[in-house]
Image (cartoon, rainbow, N blue to C red; front, side, top):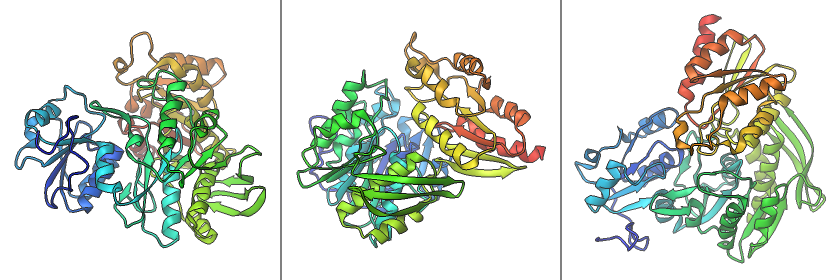
Length: 486
């Protein structure tokens, strides 16, 4: 096929398509794909896309960018004019009719990370943020610090940064900050996404078992991250959080300078005297047991203080002045859907959060409780990811959600996506929470849960909605019904 190599995708050595050419993204409403669409639009391409699920905030962003999006996958989406390139997201299966039309018409195609490498990274210095937890928030911190130091880094994040209102910017040389996701790239490109990024430096925030649909055990996950750090040149840097045993294993493969950070006393970068309230956090940072400075940030929770340490370590290596680090962290309000206060009605605060792994759920609830104490903490949880649909974390979610006082749990959406005999049980989770003395309720979907919650909520409650998806619009539904009730 013309312009394509033996694997079927465009040869990255080929020049970029001419500006104005149509590039079409299959699965465009994923957070990463939406960000890529925005960058391609910035670069002057005619960008279109298709997706089955169109929901805010990504659907709103695509509308603001004037990017045409087709609802559903159909070969006709590739007509008038036919795209010069198709970018196929990892949500797309091999039997997808639109993907099949791409192959039949011999339209050049790439996976999402191949496209990032081709369009964004070849002329930049890649700074990769990887790990099980905290990638997007850590990315937002690094972008904020570099901007405070008078750079305009390119970046791509798995969410919308409150600093910029987007999850992307093509930016200017030399830096490009990008999340390094360990999930598979596409059905035709089985590598972890981060294997395409060739980093100059990596922040490794954490390492815990996840993505049970593609990694069989912790050993295979560690091996994937070891492959990532082996790509770092000897002149590069690995900033690694040694609070996690898996990270300590990955460090052994690093061919470069390693800076360690975390809560352990032997970490090179650590903090003391963490103080948190609903307006943010303050803590004191030490480097090699010497006072480095005091940090003030709008972000809350010990986990975000640890994330800040990783960014401070990398910034130190890059030569960023301490004043810019302090300014950048003070001005970093994080990412939408990460501890995002959506509204307060009749004294009831409604917070949206992307947490879905049990560790992320636990740390999010702990952070919000510490900031809003002594108010009653209410959690609504949706087990929507490919891992949370499986039984592996059945008991872990009991412990994680027990950090709330009142819990609402959705039935597992699309349970057939998990193997029969290895499926998570929402009814069992609710029963187990009740056995621990918690008040817990089960609902078939977000709408039913919304109606249940409105009847149970009291003035002064703090509600945290935990899901990596739209949750049937639970947050907006709840705010609307609370307004009606008040």
